[in-house]
Length: 164
Image (cartoon, rainbow, N blue to C red):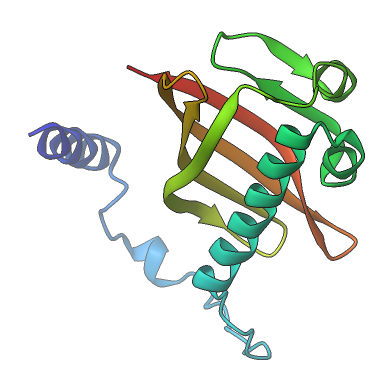
């Protein structure tokens, strides 16, 4: 229904402004010649998703081990984290909070989706499932934004939202 109303509103604007009308002037406009460009290889979205998911798994394991070196190497200098409590941290503050995690029994990433991708940037969304040694468990929807620098995918930002 909303898409119908949006289409109807757009149609009204086009009609009112005369955007869709043909005039004698519009028929005399110059034609733009389309030149062919070398065929670009289409993006392999599955390969990108697999690569980003591998990076995400590596980063999650590194965080559990308290390995800030790996995390520092896999994130941009201007990395920003918004955690499940809404706390926003830059790279230095996020790295300072990483410690060896001894309370986690297991974790799993499920429902990975590549929301967008091009040659230089991509967005991966997934659910992080965590089970503590105490038996308690929780889930968070995570959205990671990646950029490609020097041929390598790096995490630019991460947004975590607790799922209740």
